Length: 420
Image (cartoon, rainbow, N blue to C red; front, side):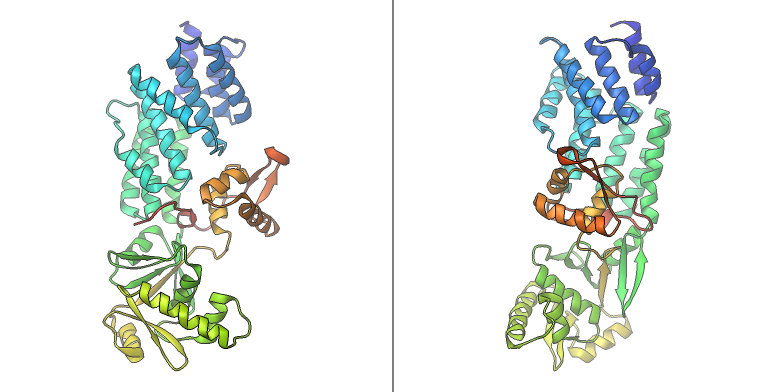
């Protein structure tokens, strides 16, 4: 390999794409095309970067498996930046096998980090955490150590763990400083701002108080019954009742939590859960059925008791309506309601768009685990509200949103499996 290629590669590793282009911009051999593609990706021209990388991969011969694997890995990173989640993951797996077979540990770590980042975008937190735990970073360059720490930071954020997130951020900051790459250091600092922004709201007595992620973690760790509106669940200590797939039951639970320590009226609960403006005997009968189902779900945490005017939520160990009121005053087990930082049926879509990248409807549908038609309706609503806008038309259309100011989107993001 000639000196120009070596110098261009060093420039790219140092985060200097213009310096790399000065050395290979006029060359069309496969190695130069690959370096040009990576440089264009660092400069933000993802479409041109993908074209150059594909030309480079076709140009390498059948014996140059490592070089072709590097092109595939770079293309996978470009696809990730472009939020092209439909890019074939098996190609990255093939590249990883080639790196392992030829002892290229550095690029193998890079490929594994790309796989983990893709899992995070798809909301598969358990799989991402398991893969991250298996990473072998001994001897890895500082830039990869910084990326790995940022991945760990993202996982702990999505788990709602503030202190481990701060520790991961500190590791990322140190590694980014060692790498000397200014863009990587800026990315770390931008990620760290999330910890100081409100991630949820604590609703009590009709008032809402913003909470940072650390404060949310403290609320969840308390001995109280926590109705988690961000993840649509109820918690008490280690016990968790998930209601994310039962929207009617969660609507009733939230109504009870908002009214606590008082009672929630039947008409209000019917309007919340069923959307009925006028109640009739059929609605009241359905309310009794759904309350019975909610009572069974909440049995480990609290009781749902009927009153003359409606229903009341009583944590285990509290006797009757008067006992619930006294418990709220005397500091016994309480009911605490965590609400999302914004109230919107399209909050998850907005949370994904808030990363500043341009998303296609197909990628949003994959990340949310829903249909493209559902995503399109959400995007139209967000566009009407001035919170999202479209770029391009047809198959090339992408959606972006201005950075969401004033709060963190951590707890708005989708989770494809259970959460802790």
